[in-house]
Every structure is written in C-alpha cells, then in structure tokens.
Amino acid sequence: MSELAIIGGTGLDKIPNLEIVHREVCHTPFGEPSAPLTHGRLGGKEVVFLPRHGPAHSIPPHRVNYRANLWALKHVGVENVIGVAAVGGIKKTMGPGLIAIPDQIIDYTYGREHTLYEADLPHVTHIDFTQPYCESLRQHLLDAGESSGVKPIAGGTYGATQGPRLETAAEVNRMERDGCDIVGMTGMPEASLARELNLCYASCAVVANWAAGRGSDPISMKEIEKNLVQGMEQVKTLLITLLALRAV
Ligand code: HPA
Image 1 (cartoon, rainbow, N blue to C red):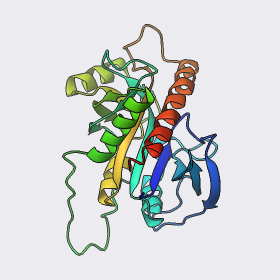
Image 2 (cartoon, helix red, strand yellow; image 1 turned 60 degrees about the vertical axis):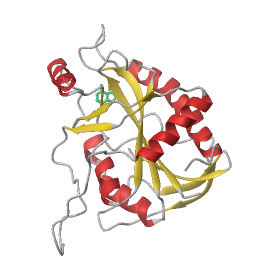
Image 3 (cartoon, rainbow, N blue to C red; image 1 turned 180 degrees about the horizontal axis):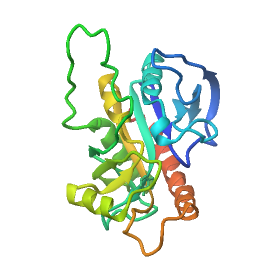
Image 4 (cartoon, protein in one colour; image 1 turned 135 degrees about the vertical axis):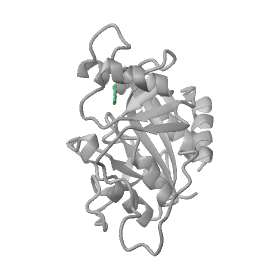
C-alpha cells in the first residue's frame, strides 16, 4: 500500500488511537512544517499524521506553512493525502455534524505562499487544476463512508476564505451565488500545492456550524467545538475503514 498521510484540522490535532512508531522533524526549502511528521499505525495500517495547526493548535489558517507541510510529506514518500478540515455549511443540505467529500474549490484566499513554482525555473509551469481533488482517493473515501455507515455527502464546492475571522452574511450570500456549498479557511493552497507535487489529495470536510447568516443564532465557538467532537469521531471511523479496506 502506498503511504497515506492525514493532515488533521481543527478538532483533529491528534488521533488518540494512532499507534506512534516515530516522529520525524523535517526541514524543507520552504521552512518548517506545522509539526514533526508522526509515523504510526491506525487500525494496524501505516499512516503519517500532521496536525495542520501545530501540536498545540496555535497556527491560524493564514499562517500555516502549506508549502512546507506538503513538501515534507512528499519528501518522506507519501503518495496520498487526506486533508481533514472543519467547515461551515452554506447549502441547506450541508448541516452541522455532516461530512462532505467535496469535488470542487473556489479560492478566495489572498497573500498566502501558494506555489512551489517560484524561482530558478527553467520555464513557466502551469498545472491542470480542472478537477482539484484526486478522484480515486475521493471514491475510496466515499466507499469507506458507505461501508462504515458514516455516509458522507458526495461532492460539493468548497469555498476557501482567508480567515481567521468568519465571513459576513453578505460574503456567504455571494459565495452561494458563486456555487459554494461549504466554507473553510484551509482548503487552499493545500489542494493546489498537492497537485504541484503530484500528490493524490482529497478533502474530508466536517461541517461544524451553519455559515454566517444561515443559522438562527450567531456562530459560537462552543457550537463549533460540540459539532466537531461528534464529526471527528465519524472521521476516525471513516479513516480506519478506509485503511482496513486497503483502498489506497
Ligand atoms: N467559515 C470558515 N471556516 C470555517 C467555518 C466557517 O463558517 N466553520 C469552520 N471553519
């Protein structure tokens, strides 16, 4: 099986049932990753785990060194990457507690170091990003979702915002008009850097709250945390099933 990495987001800074084999400190040409890479076994299967926001959840979405994170994973031989991420639900079908495996992205971020193709290039390089996620890994996640009973939503457009503030109601309205189903702060440039590195990347999005202006109450951290605890339990079940199926 090719090595699978899990990038954990808010609510998944560690995986309690991950049997840790060793931790590897990586230095990359782009700086330091969010944390040492944790090589371990989940359900008896090898995985590499990296908490996107650092071990103590102290790195905000716009300060994550996405380039170093993806580069380090590639460098240790990872081929498949699942980016777990908390999101807000925009569309009526994307209620809190649900899990989605999106199939499209709209990028609203700015000012982030977003490419590895920057200096000392023999020629200008453009990557194909028509389908931003790796379809085979998406399908494996959806199959594992069906087998485990987690039943994630298949598809949806992830709108990536800059953060760390949440959106205004008008911004969410615009995103819905654009076709976004969910909104999160970390989906980009993670997905496009993975493509630049030829990594097979898919997102597992946990809906933590109704996006701004969509719920009846203001968004509270308490609500987000409550939904994430439940959602991340489902993510763990899904990941263990995926590994058990030896699907990647
Ligand atoms: N917006 C952006 N990012 C998020 C949200 C949200 O509503 N919820 C969790 N991450």
